[in-house]
Amino acid sequence: MALAAPSDLVLTPRFGDARLVGSFRFVLSLALLVSLGVMPQVARAQFGYFQDVSRLTMDRPIGTARIQGMGGASQAIGADLSNLATNPAGIGWYQHGELVAAPAVTNNAANGKYLGQSVDDSKANLNFSNVGFVFASHPPSNSAKVLRGGAFAIGINRQADFQTSVSWAGTSSGVSTDALGNLSAVANGLVHNYLELARLNGIGSNILGAAQLFPDQQQVRSAYSVYMIDTSTTGGIFTTFLPPADYAQKMTINTSGSRMSIDIGGGVNLLDRITFGLSAGMGLYNYTEARNYSETFDKIYYDGANPIKNDSTYLGSSYTLEDQVSTRGASFNLRVGVQALLTKSLRFGASVQLPSVYGLYQGYETKLSANYRNVTQTITRNGIQNTQRLPTNPFRGPIEVPDVYYLVTTPWKFSSGLAYVNRKFGIISADVDYIDYATASISSPDFNAVGDDREIRNVYNKVVNVRLGAELRYENWRGRLGFGQYGNPISDKIELGYFFSKGTQYYSVGGGYRDSDFFMDLALTYNRNQQRYTAHTYTQHADITQHLWNLQTTFGYYF
Image 1: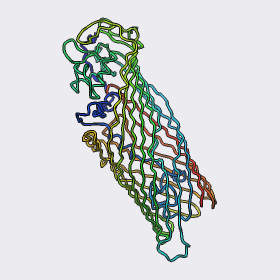
Image 2 (image 1 turned 30 degrees about the vertical axis):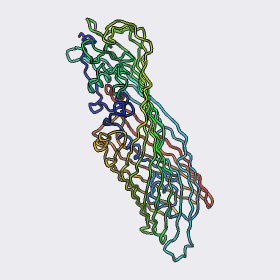
Image 3 (image 1 turned 90 degrees about the horizontal axis):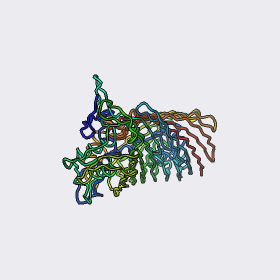
C-alpha cells in the first residue's frame, strides 16, 4: 500500500466529468483571456468571450409590475410602457399621456452542494425596473380618419440583473484505493492545474527570467513564486515537491451588474384595429464577477509502511486564488412590431428585435497567495537544490490584464402572442419567442476571435420561450398570475464553468388599482434555476440551486 515518493508521482486526474476540462477561467482564464495586453507584438487566438452571448441575450419577465405580474406575456397587450422593450406596436393604443416609475427589490438565495456538503448564500439589491413617460394623441372616436391616433414614449427598462452570491465547500481526497487495497495519488488541487498548464503549453523554467510573459506563462510563474511548483534538477520542466493531500476547498463567487435599455419609440393606430410601432435605443451592459477560491491541507499522504499520516508541518497551510473580470459596454437596439384586433376580444401581436452589436471592454486581474506553517522543504531554485524554510506568506500579483475591446453581435429575436380581452372580467395572454443563439458572433481588432466564434456554434442552441399570463378585473382592482418557461441556450451535451441546466421557470403573482388619474401595481416574481460550476480542472462540479425573488411596484400618473 505504499505511495510513490512525491518527486515520482504519477497523478490520476480526478474529473467530475471529462467535459469539464479547462472549463472554468479560475486557473486557465488568463490563458483564455487577452494576451495582447501582455505582449502586443504577437496575436494569439482567444477563448472565453463566447459566454457573454448568453448574458447579453437571455431574457426574464421585464417591464412594469402589471406585465411582470402576468409572467411577461405582453406581445398582444398594449398601452403599457413595457411595450418599448417588447413590442413597440403597443404604444399605438395609448389615448393619454402617462408618467411611470417602477422601483424593485430582488433577493437571490443560493444553495451549493459539493462533495456531500451544503452551503447557503444570498444577495439583495434595490433598483428601478422601469422609468419613463408617454405622450399620446387620439382623435374623437367618431373620426372618419384612417389614422386614429399615435403616441411617443421614452423609457428605461432593466432587462437582466446579475446580482448573485454563490458559495460551496468540501474536502477533496488526494488518493484512491483500487480493488486490491493499493493506494495511488490523484490530481485534486491547484498545483496539478499549473503543472498541466505548463505541460500542455510547453512552458519551461526559461520563463522565470523573462521580462514579458503571455497570460498562461504568468499563471505558471505565479505558482512557482508561491512555491506551489518547482523546477526539475534534470531539465527545464516544472514539477512539485508537495506530497499528495486531501484539500479542504472553498469557493465564493460574487457577481454584480445589469443589462438595461434606454429606448425611444412610438406607434400609430389605424382604424382602431391595428397598430404599428418602432423603438430604438441604447443597450447598456455591465457585468463583474469576483471569485475567491482557497485550498487548505487537510491530510497528508507519504510513502512507507504506514502510508496515511497526519503531518503537522503542512496541516493548515493553504493557497488562495482571487480574480475579477469586469465587462462593460453599449449597443444600438432596434425593434419593430404590430398588434391587431382579430375579433372584438381576440388580439394578435408580433415583433422582431434586430441583432444588436455590443461594443465591449473587458478587464481582468488575479492574485495568487500562500500561507505556510513552519514548512521546511527541499526545493530547486535557479538550478540549485537546497533545504529551506518557506516564507510564511508568499504571493504573486495582482496581475492586471489591460482592457480588451471586442464586438458581440446578438441573434435575431422573433416574438408573437395572443390575448383574449374582456373589458369587464379581464385578460388571458400568451407569448412565444424564438432565438437561435448559435447565430451570434464575436469579432475584435485586438485579438483573433475564431475560437470564440467556433465555440458559439458548438455550445449554443435554438430556444423557444413561452410566457402565460392572466389578469382578473373587479371594478378598479386587478389581480394577476403568470408563468414563463425560458429555454436552455446551452447544449445539453456541453458543460461550461457554469450553465443553465434545465432552462429557467418564472412564476408571478400581482395586483393593482387603477382610476382615471393614477394607477399602482405590485408584482412578486419567483425564479428557480439550477446551475453547475467547477472551480478548476481538477475538482468535481458543484451543483447550485438558486431562488430569485423580485418584488416590484409601479406607480403611474395619467395626464
